[in-house]
Amino acid sequence: MLYIILFIVNFRHFYEKSKIILGWKPMADTIKNHKRVKKFKCYDCGQKYTALCYLIKHVEKEHKDKIPKGMSTKQYIFNKAHKKDYQLCVICKKNKTAFNEQTMRYNRYCSEACRKKAGEIANANLKKKTGKDRSERMSDPDTQKGMLANRKTSGTYTFSDGKTTIGYASSYELEFLKFYDLDFRGDPLDIMECPYSFEYEMDNAKHTYIPDYYIPSANLIVEIKWEKQENEVHDTERKEPYREDAVRKSGKFNYIKIRGTEYTEFVQVMSIIKERNLDTTGNYDILFITSYAPNKQ
Image (cartoon, rainbow, N blue to C red; front, side, top):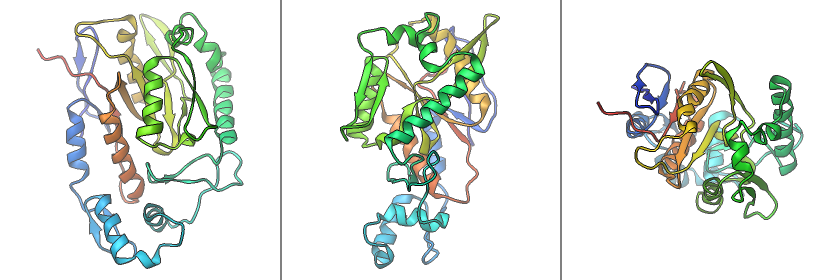
């Protein structure tokens, strides 16, 4: 059973049932419940396992001779489960995309050019919808990220492949990109500045929320925040429940908020999504993980 815990910075919080899990301690329950059922099937012999790692070991031991040369075990398992041999880029619709070992799914884009084109399309849609594109919104003095973008800590990160780049607006975003690239070994073509925006109301005024990053193959929005000090409250902290609720109500995206440089839950979420991407039988709930704990009264 999944739970939602959504609370407001001024120490109010509420609880509601939904098809969304909003994290802190529920994250542990999510992992426990996720691995309880034997849902990972070998499509060569029908054997089932409770975890992807067991299925991988089984295939490598019992069916290694069936894995095509140059293809990883994970890709072979995915292809068998989804009855496909490749996937075309969603932008150019001509080139095959690489298989993403970290998310157990094919990338959506075949190249840096197509990834950037996807961002341009999303930017044009944002301007059509709101009257401003992402860069205009980021430079808006009323936008928190606009203020961040003008800091000395903003810049462009070049991935270890030496060619793929992505922007960052704070030192914490930079540290996350380094972690994603160098430690997590994430595919640089599978992360982009978030192309989606969300409208919300607060204090009788309408606002637009643009999260930090988006990982397409995981359908995961990633929000990076500074490390919160005890009893610390900022204006942006007050906005966060409204922003999160706007994303939650869309019902379309997995979401995680990362505080400072603590990436444990990110790795856990990506592990769950990896297994979900393989299972063709599951009708899964959206993962919605924040780093806040509920107020204890």
